[in-house]
Amino acid sequence: MGDETDVLVIGSGAAGLTVALTLPAHVRVTVISKGRLSDGSTNWAQGGIAAVLEETDSIDSHIHDTLVAGAGLCHEDTVRFVVERGRRAIEGLISRGVPFTASEREDGYGYHLTREGGHSHRRIIHVADATGKAVQKTLQERAAEAPNIDAVERHVAVDLVTNRHLEGSAAGPDRCHGAYVLDRTTGRVRAVRAKAVVLATGGASRVYMYSSNPDGATGDGIALGWRAGCRVGNMEFNQFHPTCLYHPEAKNFLITEALRGEGAILTLPSGERFMPRIDPRAELAPRDVVARAIDHEMKRLGLDHVLLDISHKHPDFIVGHFPNIYRRLRRYGIDITERPIPVVPAAHYTCGGVVTDFHARTDLTGLYAVGECAHTGLHGANRMASNSLLECLVFGTAAAEHIAAGLDRMPPPAAIRPWDESRVTNSDEEVVVTHNWSELRRAMWNYVGIVRTQRRLERAKRRIDMLADEIDEYYGNFRITADLLELRNLVTVADLIVRSALARRESRGLHYIADFPERAGDTRDTILSPTAAPLRAAGTA
Image (cartoon, rainbow, N blue to C red; front, side):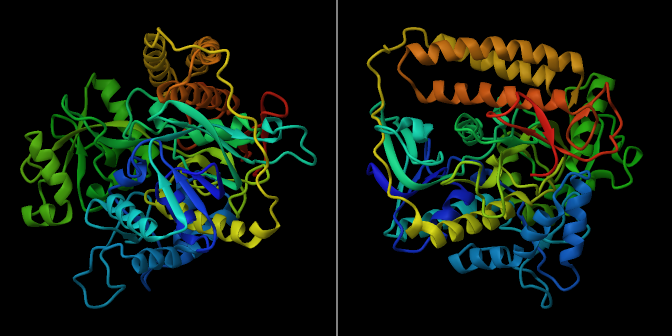
C-alpha cells in the first residue's frame, strides 16, 4: 500500500467494494480492511436483498412497507431514492456474477423471491441462505481483477486527517485529507493521503455483550467521523435480531428471518405459539416487535430461550431452501427437519450513524460514509429486513458517482505530519483493555438493551464516562494496538448511543423506554453534533 491514493475506502464489505468498483478505471483506489477482506458483516448476511423485481409488486408498496417498519421516522425522500434504484442495483450484481437462486416458475423475474418480516410482497432476492457470502465473494473477485484497486488487509484506521494534522498552516475550510493507518503486521502507523475518503466500516453491534455480528463491528467509522467533527444521528435505534442460535458451542450464529418468511413459528418450550396474541402479523411483524415479544416472554417465564420451529414443512423443502443453516445446525446436534431451534435476540444492526446526504457526503468536505456506519434516513426507528444490503449498493454507487464527477476539481493530497510515537511506550497492562472491553459491553447489555429505563440509562452513562477516561489515559500513554483502537471506538459509540437514548423521551421503533411507553406526537431525528452544544434534537438531516 502506498502513502498516497486518489480515494481511500475504509472497509471492504458490500458498501466499500461497491464504491471501489463503481469508480472509473483511471481512479486509484485503496481499500483497507482490519482483518481479511471478507471479515465484515456482508459475508454473514443470510437472507437477501429487498428490491421491486416483479410486476405484482410496486415501488410505492416497498416504500410504504419501509415507512411503516421505520415507525414514522424514515425520510420518505430517502426511501424513494433507494427503492427506485433497487432493480438497477440487483442487475449490477447479476452483471458482476452474483449467482442468485433461480425461480422454478416460468413466469416472473426469473429468480426466486422470498418474503421477510414487514414486507407485503415476495421481494427478497437471495443466494440460497448465504446471500452475503456470495455477494462478498463476487465483489472481491471483481476488485482483484481491477488494476486500479489496491485492496489491503490487516490495516486499521486510527483517525481521519483534517487540517489540524497538516504540515504548516492550512488555508480554507476544514476538509479530510486522508487517514492515519495502523499496519497490524508491523505495529507502525503511517499517514495515507487521499483526495477523498469513504467510511464503509459497518455498524457497532459489538458494543453489546451478545451480538449476531462479527467481532470487527466496533463502530469504527462512526467514531472516526465523530472525532473529525461530523454529526451523527439516531444512535438510540439499535436493532436486536429476534432469532440467534442459543447453544453453548455456537458464537454469533444468526437464524435468518427468511425461515419465518417461509412459515417457521415461534413457540414457548411448552409448544404454545405466542406471536399471534401480540401482533396480528405474528412472526412476520417487524423485528423490533418480535424481539421485544421474545424478550418479554423470556423475562415473564424465566426462560433462557424460546423456540423457532419449521419442522412442520417437508424435509426436502427445508433442506432445499436453507442448506447452510441445516448443515450448520446438524453440527450442533439439531436437525431442523425434526425439531425446533432454540433462539434468543441479539444485537444485530445499527440504524443510526454519520449524517449524510444523497451523495453520501458527510459534514466534512472530502469525507463520505456508506452502509451501516451512515445515517441516511432510510431506516428510521427500525430497519426493515433486507433493506441493508440494498442501502450499501445504492449509496455506494451514489458516492462513487459524486467522487468521480468532482475528482479533477479536488485539491491534491496535502502534506501530513508523521505519526508521533516519541512520548509513548509499549504497554505491560494489556489486561486493562480486556477488562474494560468486557465491562463496557456488559453495561450496555444490562442497561441499554431491548427495554430501557431512564435510571438504567443514567447508570450506563456514569460507567461509560469512567471507562472513557481510563481508555483515553491508556491511549495517550502506550503504543496503540488494533484491540485498543476498537475499544476506543466502542466507548465513543456507547456514549453516543446512551446520550441519544436519554434525549428521546418516547418509545418508538427499536427504542423502547418503560418511563415513556407511548409514541410522541412530533417526529424528529436525534442529531448529536461534536462542534455545537453537547446535545441537541433536530429535524431530519
